[in-house]
Length: 569
Image 1: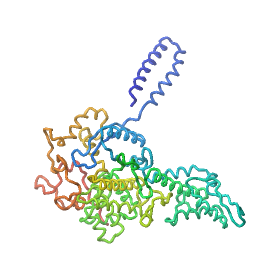
Image 2: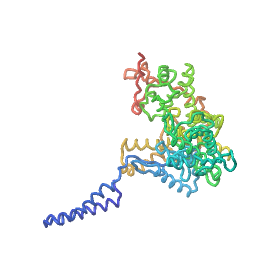
Image 3: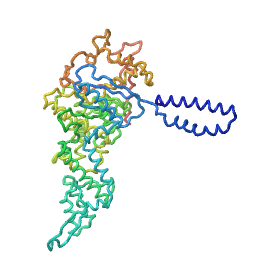
Image 4: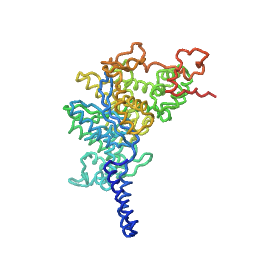
């Protein structure tokens, strides 16, 4: 695909070249053909350099009320074809949409995406929003410093017998705003007592981490740091703590007490702007790590044992991850039946992990919970991660004391993107919950940080246009698609869809998500049977009456047949 004007220029150039070549051939003029070489090179360059990558996906922007108490939950406002989108491009499109909404006097409080654009949750438009970004910036600055400059900062001049006999004056060669003079003096005192500069630096590296007994080396896996690596580790720590003090003193935001601070938090004139990751995507990422055996507290053999117990509701399809995008399969992996089974068997570590994940998912997708319960479940998940990342956080709640060389990848067996998403979402949700309570506002809907409405819109596209379609087909059916999207959502339309679940197409204000269901048993606390994988279930045929609960033809078409669990040899 080319830009429209570029394509027209190439088309005109093609006509000119064909005329010139035909004229030169008719006249037998070899010089004219030779002179066309330069023009042909420019033409060929234009063909291959101005060509764009063909779009393979649609990027959909939808706006939604954070209360989510009316249908439709979200309204599509922009659809554009893309092949791949960088973080900076998404940021620019986000700012553009935010600006338009603010011009319409709409208060914008956040932006939810999937995990493809992870930097949105660590870096804002004007400043870092996460302590993880501060660590990255500090490490980048320290890695660019040469060994001579670092030695000038940490290796002091020792002036003996001045100004008085028997005293030593310690003067740093090069002062740095992030490095306290007293700390450089401690290095000098160690050198006066007979330690070499390398030994004094290694001792100082452990001294500045009061709450971390064995700080990690600059290069992961090395048993002994060189003096350059040790200086960079120490310099990164000082730069991080200096940045935290700078933002606290100048902007009034404290990263020592908060892992994530949204944009606009430094002013009361506008609403905080929260960048979050879809909770459903995070849930699927956690389950994927569990299925791969990366999580130490999740022994997959015990989940296989739970699958053999029909009271757990766990199926072979859910355990294997046949459909990795299925949230119901993820809910079976960490369902209430599985948690109860692990507790009954005495698998304490596995049961604790499964219960934490189950409750965390309930906090964002479950009904019948109070705001206090949701907050507690989020805190349990956050503390589960911090217990390995910052083991001191329960005794000394100061994130500036974090080991800067601790890699995020592998914490609790999770990926780096998952750690960033979980810590950002929980910090953002709890901050917004506290703001709503302080300002006497209605609480934010638990599903406000999900993108399920976008997926519903995409399912309509697949239903009407097929699994694969191009941009032209989408634009031709644009009006019909949006008419389908708003059916039974607009009470003025003369038609409706009959559904068994009336809640999905209810008009007017919906009840609070915190109110318990009429049955008294919430969806995520209900153990679903495995009738589709049960070999004892008879199959209806023409000679027999269909039994109650049997799968319908439509269900068989849209959902894969679930295989039987493997035999235990």
